Length: 163
View 1: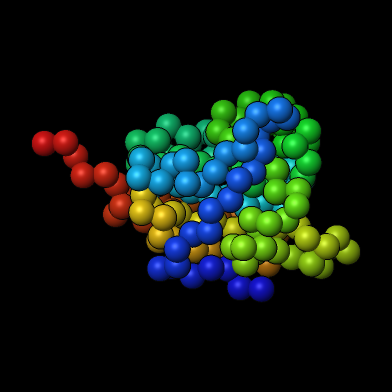
View 2: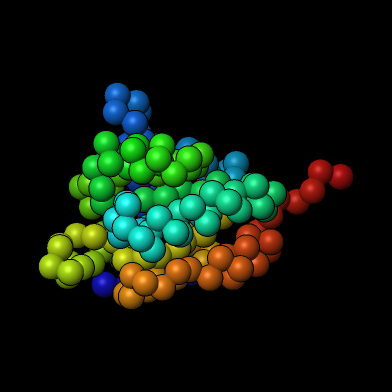
């Protein structure tokens, strides 16, 4: 599977954040903010925890770049809620338990240490119009994204300043 390339219209998704609440959709943010989508293999694994905590530490900088961050894993909604709570993650960590978003974005891995349907670590930046302006994936779960490259892309798609 190959990740969706730059220039592609980003597939919408509806993924749960909390039990009993309406799912969050990518389309909820379109027209308002750029969205950084972080697919990660599994909550509570070492590298995934490191990645999501690093994003939390830099969250204010992402906001200054007019970006909303969404973390997505295959874990159940109960696991993603606990993961976010235990690591004080203030951005949404969404459950793609049915594997629909990871499949649509081309990052589904059907041989992750014998597990089928786990996301490869990947990053997509979707601009306000819903177009993918950055696409990165690693088949090596030990490699973290280049967040500096993501920030540089966000700098180019920031909202025009009110003048």
